[in-house]
Length: 366
Image (tube, rainbow, N blue to C red):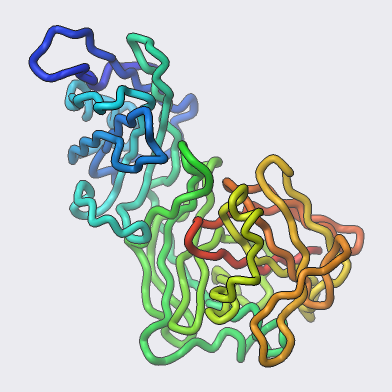
Protein backbone atom coordinates (compact mmCIF):
# COMPACT_ATOMS: atom_id res chain seq x y z
CA UNK A 1 0.00 0.00 0.00
CA UNK A 2 1.47 3.34 -1.00
CA UNK A 3 0.84 6.92 -0.10
CA UNK A 4 2.63 10.15 -0.92
CA UNK A 5 4.10 11.33 2.35
CA UNK A 6 6.19 14.39 1.50
CA UNK A 7 7.83 16.40 -1.31
CA UNK A 8 11.51 17.00 -1.87
CA UNK A 9 12.00 20.49 -3.29
CA UNK A 10 14.66 20.96 -5.97
CA UNK A 11 15.21 24.52 -4.81
CA UNK A 12 13.58 27.16 -2.66
CA UNK A 13 10.95 29.52 -4.18
CA UNK A 14 11.25 28.23 -7.74
CA UNK A 15 9.09 26.27 -10.13
CA UNK A 16 11.32 23.22 -10.59
CA UNK A 17 9.53 19.84 -10.48
CA UNK A 18 9.29 18.12 -7.12
CA UNK A 19 10.31 14.58 -6.29
CA UNK A 20 7.54 12.67 -4.56
CA UNK A 21 8.09 9.91 -2.04
CA UNK A 22 5.67 7.03 -1.61
CA UNK A 23 5.81 4.81 1.45
CA UNK A 24 5.59 1.07 0.86
CA UNK A 25 4.17 -0.58 3.97
CA UNK A 26 5.27 -4.05 5.11
CA UNK A 27 3.30 -6.82 3.44
CA UNK A 28 2.68 -8.45 6.82
CA UNK A 29 1.83 -5.75 9.34
CA UNK A 30 2.38 -7.76 12.52
CA UNK A 31 4.45 -5.27 14.53
CA UNK A 32 2.75 -3.02 17.07
CA UNK A 33 3.70 0.60 16.26
CA UNK A 34 1.82 2.42 19.04
CA UNK A 35 5.00 3.58 20.83
CA UNK A 36 6.41 5.41 17.77
CA UNK A 37 6.82 9.04 18.75
CA UNK A 38 8.70 10.51 15.79
CA UNK A 39 9.59 9.95 12.14
CA UNK A 40 12.80 11.28 10.61
CA UNK A 41 13.76 11.54 6.94
CA UNK A 42 17.22 12.05 5.44
CA UNK A 43 17.81 13.28 1.88
CA UNK A 44 21.38 12.21 1.11
CA UNK A 45 23.61 13.98 -1.38
CA UNK A 46 25.96 12.57 -4.00
CA UNK A 47 28.99 12.47 -1.68
CA UNK A 48 27.21 10.70 1.20
CA UNK A 49 28.33 8.65 3.20
CA UNK A 50 31.94 9.60 2.49
CA UNK A 51 30.91 13.12 3.52
CA UNK A 52 28.57 12.52 6.46
CA UNK A 53 27.41 16.14 6.44
CA UNK A 54 26.08 15.83 2.87
CA UNK A 55 22.53 15.18 3.97
CA UNK A 56 19.40 17.20 4.72
CA UNK A 57 17.31 15.99 7.68
CA UNK A 58 13.82 16.60 8.99
CA UNK A 59 12.22 15.03 12.06
CA UNK A 60 8.64 15.44 13.29
CA UNK A 61 6.98 14.09 16.41
CA UNK A 62 3.78 12.09 15.90
CA UNK A 63 1.19 10.09 17.80
CA UNK A 64 0.95 6.70 16.09
CA UNK A 65 -1.66 3.99 16.34
CA UNK A 66 -0.91 0.28 16.50
CA UNK A 67 -0.36 -0.25 12.74
CA UNK A 68 1.97 1.00 10.02
CA UNK A 69 -1.08 2.42 8.26
CA UNK A 70 -1.54 4.76 11.22
CA UNK A 71 2.09 5.88 10.92
CA UNK A 72 1.56 6.54 7.22
CA UNK A 73 -1.51 8.63 7.96
CA UNK A 74 0.25 10.56 10.72
CA UNK A 75 3.03 11.78 8.40
CA UNK A 76 0.92 12.36 5.28
CA UNK A 77 1.98 15.67 3.68
CA UNK A 78 4.06 16.58 6.74
CA UNK A 79 7.54 16.50 5.18
CA UNK A 80 9.16 18.96 2.78
CA UNK A 81 12.93 18.96 2.32
CA UNK A 82 15.28 21.01 0.21
CA UNK A 83 17.61 18.93 -1.96
CA UNK A 84 21.28 18.68 -0.93
CA UNK A 85 23.63 21.00 -2.81
CA UNK A 86 25.36 18.01 -4.40
CA UNK A 87 22.05 16.62 -5.71
CA UNK A 88 19.81 13.89 -4.39
CA UNK A 89 21.32 10.39 -4.27
CA UNK A 90 19.15 8.52 -1.77
CA UNK A 91 16.50 8.72 0.93
CA UNK A 92 16.40 7.19 4.40
CA UNK A 93 13.53 7.07 6.89
CA UNK A 94 13.57 6.21 10.60
CA UNK A 95 10.74 5.62 13.07
CA UNK A 96 11.75 6.50 16.63
CA UNK A 97 10.38 5.81 20.11
CA UNK A 98 11.50 7.72 23.15
CA UNK A 99 11.40 11.04 24.93
CA UNK A 100 12.56 14.06 22.88
CA UNK A 101 12.96 11.71 19.88
CA UNK A 102 13.94 14.48 17.47
CA UNK A 103 16.81 15.73 19.62
CA UNK A 104 20.09 14.68 17.97
CA UNK A 105 22.80 14.71 20.66
CA UNK A 106 25.34 13.04 18.34
CA UNK A 107 25.91 10.12 20.74
CA UNK A 108 25.97 7.00 18.52
CA UNK A 109 25.30 4.68 21.47
CA UNK A 110 22.34 6.49 23.03
CA UNK A 111 19.55 7.07 20.55
CA UNK A 112 15.77 6.73 20.60
CA UNK A 113 14.67 3.13 20.01
CA UNK A 114 14.51 2.40 16.27
CA UNK A 115 11.09 0.92 15.48
CA UNK A 116 11.45 0.90 11.68
CA UNK A 117 13.75 2.09 8.93
CA UNK A 118 13.95 2.21 5.16
CA UNK A 119 16.00 3.52 2.27
CA UNK A 120 15.85 3.96 -1.50
CA UNK A 121 18.20 5.29 -4.20
CA UNK A 122 17.30 8.22 -6.44
CA UNK A 123 18.13 7.70 -10.11
CA UNK A 124 16.06 10.49 -11.63
CA UNK A 125 12.55 9.13 -11.13
CA UNK A 126 9.61 11.44 -10.33
CA UNK A 127 8.46 9.13 -7.55
CA UNK A 128 10.64 7.29 -5.04
CA UNK A 129 9.11 4.20 -3.47
CA UNK A 130 10.45 3.86 0.05
CA UNK A 131 9.78 0.47 1.72
CA UNK A 132 9.52 0.38 5.51
CA UNK A 133 11.41 -2.37 7.34
CA UNK A 134 10.06 -3.29 10.81
CA UNK A 135 12.79 -3.32 13.44
CA UNK A 136 11.08 -3.47 16.85
CA UNK A 137 7.63 -4.19 18.22
CA UNK A 138 6.15 -1.90 20.89
CA UNK A 139 5.40 -4.75 23.30
CA UNK A 140 7.80 -4.81 26.24
CA UNK A 141 9.41 -7.62 28.23
CA UNK A 142 11.48 -8.02 31.37
CA UNK A 143 15.21 -8.22 30.63
CA UNK A 144 17.96 -9.70 32.83
CA UNK A 145 21.55 -9.40 31.58
CA UNK A 146 24.50 -11.30 33.05
CA UNK A 147 27.94 -10.02 32.01
CA UNK A 148 30.46 -12.85 31.62
CA UNK A 149 34.20 -12.20 31.33
CA UNK A 150 35.01 -14.34 28.29
CA UNK A 151 38.76 -14.48 28.75
CA UNK A 152 38.54 -15.20 32.48
CA UNK A 153 36.21 -18.09 31.64
CA UNK A 154 38.58 -19.39 28.95
CA UNK A 155 41.43 -19.10 31.46
CA UNK A 156 39.71 -21.52 33.82
CA UNK A 157 37.56 -19.26 36.00
CA UNK A 158 34.27 -20.64 37.20
CA UNK A 159 31.04 -19.04 36.04
CA UNK A 160 30.62 -17.55 39.51
CA UNK A 161 33.98 -15.81 39.24
CA UNK A 162 33.71 -14.88 35.53
CA UNK A 163 30.29 -13.25 36.04
CA UNK A 164 31.22 -11.30 39.17
CA UNK A 165 31.23 -7.66 38.08
CA UNK A 166 32.79 -4.68 39.88
CA UNK A 167 30.73 -3.19 42.70
CA UNK A 168 32.02 0.32 41.90
CA UNK A 169 28.89 1.29 39.94
CA UNK A 170 30.54 1.09 36.52
CA UNK A 171 28.99 -2.22 35.42
CA UNK A 172 25.69 -2.38 33.60
CA UNK A 173 23.91 -3.05 30.34
CA UNK A 174 21.60 -1.34 27.87
CA UNK A 175 19.25 -2.74 25.24
CA UNK A 176 19.07 -1.93 21.54
CA UNK A 177 19.46 -3.36 18.05
CA UNK A 178 22.32 -3.77 15.59
CA UNK A 179 21.18 -2.76 12.11
CA UNK A 180 23.10 -3.03 8.80
CA UNK A 181 24.12 0.34 7.38
CA UNK A 182 22.05 1.28 4.35
CA UNK A 183 25.01 3.13 2.84
CA UNK A 184 28.59 2.23 3.67
CA UNK A 185 30.05 -0.81 5.38
CA UNK A 186 29.19 -2.13 8.81
CA UNK A 187 26.33 -2.00 11.28
CA UNK A 188 24.96 0.65 13.63
CA UNK A 189 23.70 0.35 17.19
CA UNK A 190 20.41 2.04 18.07
CA UNK A 191 18.90 2.20 21.53
CA UNK A 192 20.17 2.29 25.11
CA UNK A 193 16.95 3.97 26.20
CA UNK A 194 16.41 0.98 28.49
CA UNK A 195 19.12 -0.37 30.76
CA UNK A 196 20.41 -0.59 34.32
CA UNK A 197 23.51 -0.96 36.45
CA UNK A 198 24.33 -4.48 37.56
CA UNK A 199 23.06 -5.49 40.99
CA UNK A 200 24.23 -8.84 42.36
CA UNK A 201 25.84 -9.39 38.94
CA UNK A 202 22.59 -8.90 37.00
CA UNK A 203 21.27 -5.81 35.15
CA UNK A 204 17.46 -5.90 35.34
CA UNK A 205 15.10 -3.66 33.39
CA UNK A 206 12.23 -3.67 30.88
CA UNK A 207 12.48 -3.01 27.14
CA UNK A 208 11.50 -3.81 23.56
CA UNK A 209 12.72 -7.34 22.74
CA UNK A 210 10.70 -8.45 19.69
CA UNK A 211 12.95 -7.68 16.74
CA UNK A 212 12.52 -7.80 12.95
CA UNK A 213 14.24 -10.25 10.63
CA UNK A 214 16.88 -7.85 9.26
CA UNK A 215 18.54 -6.84 12.52
CA UNK A 216 19.48 -8.40 15.84
CA UNK A 217 18.51 -7.67 19.41
CA UNK A 218 21.70 -6.34 20.99
CA UNK A 219 23.22 -5.53 24.36
CA UNK A 220 25.69 -2.72 24.98
CA UNK A 221 27.22 -3.73 28.28
CA UNK A 222 30.32 -3.79 30.41
CA UNK A 223 32.30 -2.00 33.10
CA UNK A 224 35.54 -0.08 33.45
CA UNK A 225 37.44 -3.33 32.93
CA UNK A 226 35.80 -4.34 29.64
CA UNK A 227 32.60 -5.01 27.74
CA UNK A 228 31.10 -5.43 24.28
CA UNK A 229 28.24 -4.36 22.02
CA UNK A 230 26.88 -7.60 20.61
CA UNK A 231 23.94 -9.51 19.17
CA UNK A 232 22.02 -11.57 21.70
CA UNK A 233 23.02 -15.17 20.93
CA UNK A 234 20.23 -17.01 22.73
CA UNK A 235 20.01 -20.78 23.05
CA UNK A 236 21.86 -22.69 25.74
CA UNK A 237 24.10 -20.28 27.69
CA UNK A 238 27.51 -21.02 29.15
CA UNK A 239 26.94 -19.26 32.49
CA UNK A 240 23.60 -17.43 32.47
CA UNK A 241 20.64 -18.76 34.41
CA UNK A 242 17.07 -19.29 33.26
CA UNK A 243 15.54 -16.13 31.81
CA UNK A 244 18.90 -14.34 31.62
CA UNK A 245 20.70 -12.91 28.59
CA UNK A 246 24.38 -13.80 28.54
CA UNK A 247 26.65 -10.97 27.41
CA UNK A 248 30.30 -11.76 26.65
CA UNK A 249 32.50 -9.07 28.17
CA UNK A 250 35.89 -8.53 26.50
CA UNK A 251 38.94 -7.43 28.48
CA UNK A 252 40.02 -3.87 27.67
CA UNK A 253 43.76 -4.68 27.53
CA UNK A 254 43.09 -7.27 24.83
CA UNK A 255 40.75 -4.97 22.89
CA UNK A 256 43.29 -2.12 22.79
CA UNK A 257 46.24 -4.29 21.70
CA UNK A 258 46.53 -3.09 18.10
CA UNK A 259 48.47 -6.12 16.89
CA UNK A 260 45.44 -8.33 17.58
CA UNK A 261 43.59 -6.89 14.58
CA UNK A 262 44.40 -7.40 10.90
CA UNK A 263 44.38 -3.93 9.31
CA UNK A 264 43.91 -5.28 5.79
CA UNK A 265 40.86 -7.27 6.85
CA UNK A 266 39.51 -4.29 8.80
CA UNK A 267 39.60 -2.17 5.65
CA UNK A 268 37.35 -4.71 3.92
CA UNK A 269 35.34 -5.98 6.89
CA UNK A 270 35.33 -3.27 9.61
CA UNK A 271 33.26 -5.07 12.27
CA UNK A 272 35.08 -7.38 14.71
CA UNK A 273 33.43 -10.12 16.77
CA UNK A 274 35.49 -12.32 19.09
CA UNK A 275 33.71 -15.62 19.54
CA UNK A 276 34.34 -18.73 21.59
CA UNK A 277 32.76 -22.14 20.91
CA UNK A 278 31.56 -24.21 23.90
CA UNK A 279 29.98 -27.56 24.58
CA UNK A 280 26.36 -27.41 25.75
CA UNK A 281 26.38 -30.34 28.17
CA UNK A 282 26.03 -30.17 31.92
CA UNK A 283 29.70 -29.19 32.12
CA UNK A 284 30.52 -26.42 29.63
CA UNK A 285 34.02 -26.50 28.12
CA UNK A 286 35.63 -24.75 25.14
CA UNK A 287 35.63 -26.90 22.01
CA UNK A 288 38.87 -27.55 20.15
CA UNK A 289 38.53 -28.49 16.48
CA UNK A 290 35.36 -26.47 15.79
CA UNK A 291 34.94 -24.71 12.44
CA UNK A 292 33.09 -21.48 11.69
CA UNK A 293 31.62 -20.61 8.29
CA UNK A 294 30.51 -17.23 6.90
CA UNK A 295 29.66 -15.92 3.43
CA UNK A 296 33.09 -14.81 2.12
CA UNK A 297 31.44 -11.83 0.43
CA UNK A 298 30.60 -10.40 3.85
CA UNK A 299 33.11 -11.81 6.31
CA UNK A 300 36.32 -13.62 7.12
CA UNK A 301 37.06 -16.06 9.96
CA UNK A 302 40.45 -16.09 11.71
CA UNK A 303 41.15 -18.75 14.35
CA UNK A 304 43.17 -17.62 17.36
CA UNK A 305 44.42 -18.86 20.71
CA UNK A 306 44.02 -17.02 24.01
CA UNK A 307 46.87 -14.78 25.21
CA UNK A 308 49.59 -16.41 27.25
CA UNK A 309 49.50 -15.66 30.97
CA UNK A 310 50.51 -12.07 31.63
CA UNK A 311 50.14 -10.98 27.99
CA UNK A 312 47.35 -9.49 25.85
CA UNK A 313 48.26 -10.80 22.39
CA UNK A 314 45.95 -13.19 20.56
CA UNK A 315 47.95 -15.79 18.65
CA UNK A 316 46.71 -16.53 15.11
CA UNK A 317 46.47 -20.26 14.44
CA UNK A 318 47.93 -21.76 11.28
CA UNK A 319 45.21 -24.40 10.95
CA UNK A 320 41.53 -23.93 10.03
CA UNK A 321 39.76 -24.72 13.30
CA UNK A 322 39.56 -23.62 16.92
CA UNK A 323 42.19 -24.51 19.49
CA UNK A 324 41.83 -25.29 23.21
CA UNK A 325 40.19 -21.91 23.89
CA UNK A 326 37.54 -22.38 21.19
CA UNK A 327 38.36 -18.86 19.98
CA UNK A 328 37.83 -17.27 16.57
CA UNK A 329 37.59 -13.74 15.19
CA UNK A 330 34.90 -12.75 12.69
CA UNK A 331 35.63 -9.73 10.52
CA UNK A 332 32.38 -8.63 8.85
CA UNK A 333 30.89 -5.74 6.86
CA UNK A 334 27.27 -6.30 7.92
CA UNK A 335 25.21 -8.57 10.15
CA UNK A 336 26.56 -12.00 9.28
CA UNK A 337 24.89 -15.41 9.41
CA UNK A 338 27.52 -17.72 10.87
CA UNK A 339 27.43 -21.52 11.10
CA UNK A 340 29.48 -23.18 13.82
CA UNK A 341 30.26 -26.89 13.49
CA UNK A 342 31.72 -29.16 16.17
CA UNK A 343 31.60 -32.86 17.09
CA UNK A 344 29.17 -33.70 14.29
CA UNK A 345 26.69 -30.98 15.29
CA UNK A 346 26.14 -27.45 14.03
CA UNK A 347 24.49 -24.20 15.04
CA UNK A 348 23.70 -21.05 13.07
CA UNK A 349 23.79 -17.64 14.76
CA UNK A 350 23.75 -13.99 13.74
CA UNK A 351 26.81 -11.88 14.58
CA UNK A 352 27.84 -8.30 13.93
CA UNK A 353 29.82 -5.42 15.40
CA UNK A 354 30.02 -1.66 15.02
CA UNK A 355 33.19 -0.26 13.49
CA UNK A 356 34.44 1.35 16.71
CA UNK A 357 33.56 -1.26 19.34
CA UNK A 358 34.28 -4.99 19.47
CA UNK A 359 31.54 -7.61 19.93
CA UNK A 360 31.77 -10.80 21.95
CA UNK A 361 29.95 -14.10 21.56
CA UNK A 362 29.84 -17.23 23.71
CA UNK A 363 28.36 -19.90 21.43
CA UNK A 364 27.35 -23.35 22.61
CA UNK A 365 27.00 -26.22 20.12
CA UNK A 366 24.84 -29.28 20.93
